[in-house]
Image (cartoon, rainbow, N blue to C red; front, side, top):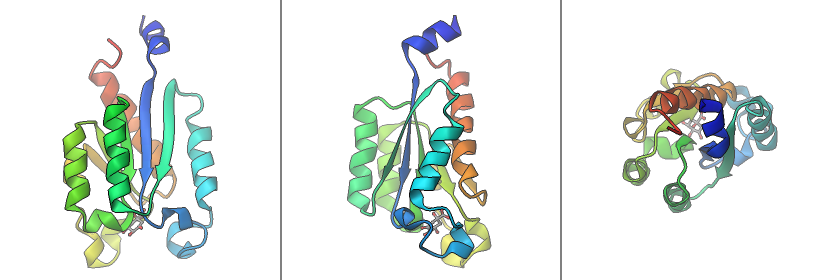
Length: 160
Ligand code: DQA
């Protein structure tokens, strides 16, 4: 029955990456790894290919554009969001407000372990608007976040 319902309506999950993440493979490789942004996106899509979900990946260097994309997630009825807000994590009340506004379960991801790094990275403005945070697992963090969302959405009787 669940399988049937899932074929009627797939879980729709957005991955939203913030500033400078398009520079993966160029920026601070000792922290963020060798893979470029396309490699990371391909890895995410390949690893989640066998899951019954629709997944769309977005990236913006601009705070307001990220808010527009989050509002689009609301309009287009996304079921869950994985967000890596980049440095806006540590500054943006506007992104916190946007995540709260749309009321879609959201998981915050960071490639690096922000708690092991400079003190200004220890505070996340956006994490309190999220259902959870994953950091320090590199690109695998995105997979873990999506798997967590699938569990949470299934608990909430997604599709029933
Ligand atoms: C990051 C951590 C942030 O502190 C930093 O500004 C980034 C990347 C991460 O994925 O580890 O741009 O979000």
